[in-house]
Length: 244
Image 1 (cartoon, rainbow, N blue to C red):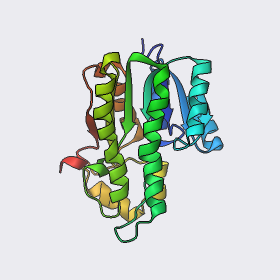
Image 2 (spheres, rainbow, N blue to C red; image 1 turned 90 degrees about the vertical axis):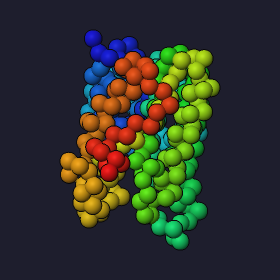
Image 3 (cartoon, helix red, strand yellow; image 1 turned 30 degrees about the horizontal axis):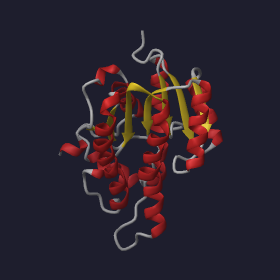
Image 4 (tube, rainbow, N blue to C red; image 1 turned 45 degrees about the vertical axis):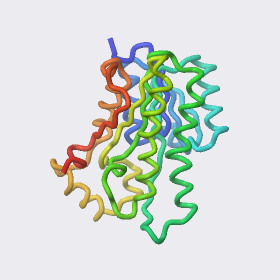
């Protein structure tokens, strides 16, 4: 038996990287998974890679109409949600003095606002005893030059988690934040130079980036009953990066 047999999971931003690896692992463990992504071609490729028990819904997590379409699809096809992994997010560098309104709005609209409304719109379909968790970042607990806006948008998620778990305790729905460290993903290739990658690797005790599959293993823990007594936590999955 799989750890998620019979469960329905929704993963935003699930067309690539650590969220895609998590979606694949969830299906291997018995779940039916709905994934989202902004680009139809990438979404189609992700669905093909996962292979079974998956529905791809194109959309932007910061767009409320897209979120409505996502959850209408979930309601029509499965009628319930047991696991919500709000992973859609973005981050670009902008040092203090060069931060624009557009930079700020892009980060907070997706990372904070989008996560809030993803969770809120999922609740009518949520089974009691389910699990909600969000992709944060170790950037929110370490100070990296140029990433203050991104860090602040991700720090918002733990504040959400603390409030929401208290509001949802009557339904026994737990809420956590998964903080990945530096992970080798397509998005990382877009936002980091080779020099920056080497710098980050030098700060990881093992000297190597994390892999999406390593995040997926922890996502499975948070999604499954193995984490039944874990609630309101910030779980750093970073190879010790934030500890030294």
